[in-house]
Length: 226
Image: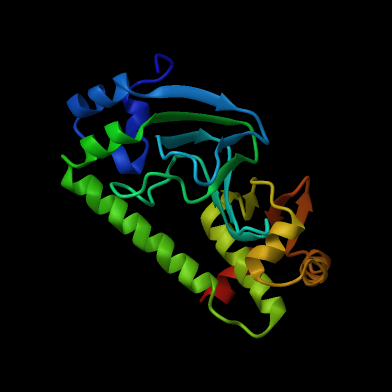
């Protein structure tokens, strides 16, 4: 990883408390790579050989059933470490990881990562806390809301919180998300999502260009989140 330094590893929250001498050992096992949009980093049930540290871009995590129907979908943004699920226990990946934009990242062998984080209590606490937060978010997402329109609004609220970047008075979601994916995340139909988005655009609350979203009135979603 000659292009980068220990300071770059420190930018990842999960590694920020690890002493420099230990990170120096990490550095010798870290590899820098780029991926093009549409490439897969790994496929569900592949051997769980690598831990990834995303520097630039967005990754989509998906899982499907035997009929090919998607049963799980989530997005990874820059300066996120993944996958943390299955550390110390699992031998394969639970989902597939696809580049939804061009990517730049580090990766290291899973065994190296696991052996080193065992030595750092604060890092283990961060991992547990992160997994707890992810679980809480997904539990909230699957709460039953009778009104389909509200489910779409709720999903957009979560995407803003997870992926949104403030640009002045607006928020931009630069991760390409299709109407079909938004329908899956909302647990509703594509037609319903299209109707809701049409109204939000008409009201000047958001706009979309090339599957990327600009939230012109974030307060609409902040009030919904309470």
